[in-house]
Image (cartoon, rainbow, N blue to C red; front, side, top):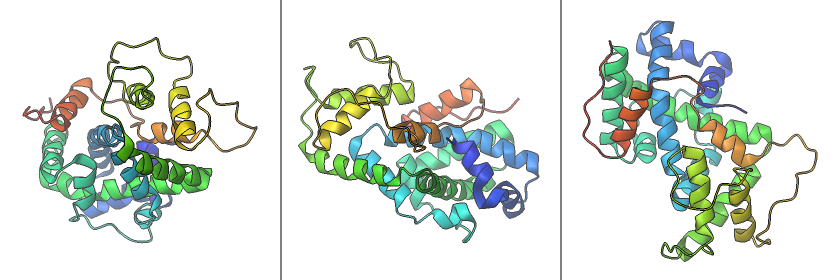
Length: 259
């Protein structure tokens, strides 16, 4: 299974980082620092999109559309000035701008360079997720998830404390994936993806029971693969993550400066 840094490193047959360096006039060390600063923000953005079923379905549709495959494969260079994907991931262009400001403060790289780099990175990441789902053999399952989430979302009941609410499983799964402090509830299962599996079984017309052990096949657990792809794959400073979290939460914290 791959993570965000793996996707960037493998993109364009391993030449993506060199291409970024040439495109934006950076040396290899600066390019790596830029990615290490930006990828935590992308990780948070992907996770936040997964917190709502409708948004997650839209993200899956983007991944599976094939629109961004050329950016990952290197058959077409993504346009650095196109910010529609960034706005989709971060919620607005203003939030993406603040992410670039924060990354510039921690790396010393010009904010204008990072602004232009971010759409390229976004397109490459989404294209890489699409390629991974196809190669690993779980793209069809993700399409089923997207269809089920879109068909079920309008029927979602208002939040209730009742334990019978099937969406409680969704929120439990999101807490497991994002690492946010869980709300008071029964002790988590030893299998962190069991709640998601039960929910999807119900939504797809099956019985709401614990999933049976998968057959001995090379296809990975799709949810585990998606959750892994949302990880950065690199150690980063906690204060930088906290700053990005504040930005995505709509708080007006200033950028953390390097040094």
